Image (cartoon, rainbow, N blue to C red; front, side, top):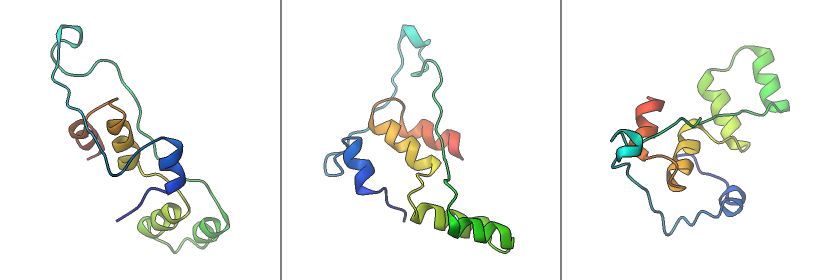
Length: 100
């Protein structure tokens, strides 16, 4: 299981002991879909020496590269989506619908 860094959580004021997710019931403004507009969920990998060496060797699988990137602080697409769900921007169901 991948963990989000405590620094990130404190910066974004997320209390892991009191999580609250929202649903999107729908209304006239969103044509009863529960959503209006679009928002991106992102995964951004910052290159460092360890990752550079793996890429240049061309021997590491995508899984190994992702594992090292996460170890170095990368937030995955699912994690970014769940953070947006915690902020009430979208729902957990929508995140998993889009990510899969």
